[in-house]
Length: 169
Image (tube, rainbow, N blue to C red; front, side, top):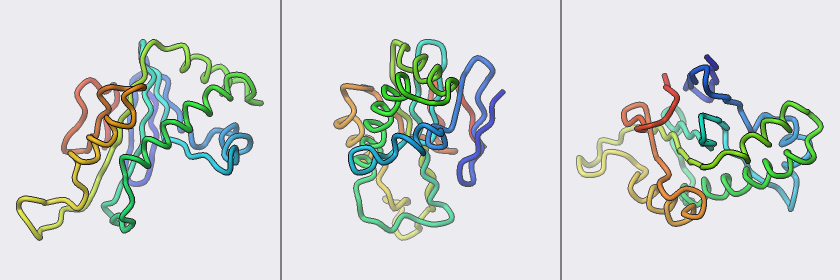
């Protein structure tokens, strides 16, 4: 079992998965991050059976989001940049383990995108108990990522994703 901590969350992946913190790769940090004026990256890459999962984690429980920017668009940009980074890593990574993992990720038959979002409850309205509207974020992800994943997910501790091969604590 592989465990990856991000913020205040611990992700556990079963043995049949290959999971890594993509944004900590030497290739991303040292070779790709500055490409085209700067690129972004998802937090975790997980290879499971015939699927490559791109997982972005946002934990706003301790520090609520204050930027009024578009979260769905931000995640979509990270997914795009990560896919470009994986393509480049498969050919040019100095770390042979990262290069091989990028090749395996690109060889999978399907891409899936998951945004793990934790946020504080705001008790100002029973109709809108959270600051970030999950339906709006999901709609934006679907619109921006339909060529990559027609059914991206927005998940949380209270709403785990159906079919995701990992657990979160």
